[in-house]
Image (cartoon, rainbow, N blue to C red; front, side):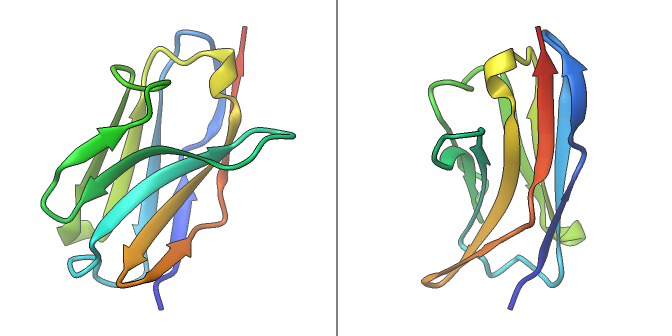
Amino acid sequence: QVQLVESGGGFVQAGGSLRLSCAASRSIFSIAGMGWYRQAPGKQREWVAGITSGGSTRYADSVKGRFTISRDNAKNSAYLQMNSLKPEDTAVYYCAATAGVTTHWGQGTQVTVSS
């Protein structure tokens, strides 16, 4: 079982930046992939970015060029650097870790972007 704890959310003005962190309770070296998702009020949870154990990254079109996902296996952590934030990026952001066929979720961290 992997427990994930997100941090780094907050309130920021449009155009600003935030860096989200996701700390895992055990080594994530064996985990195939880690990702970030978000859920805005009244909307379904959507995938934002993902990174494989080898470091390959993918992004949703809505954040491509603005967000950067990374991981540090030595620190059992993953990160999401968010730049040029827009009001439509406002959501609860969740970290996810996939081990085998199981996906583990964090509790989420709120990001609010004002116009």
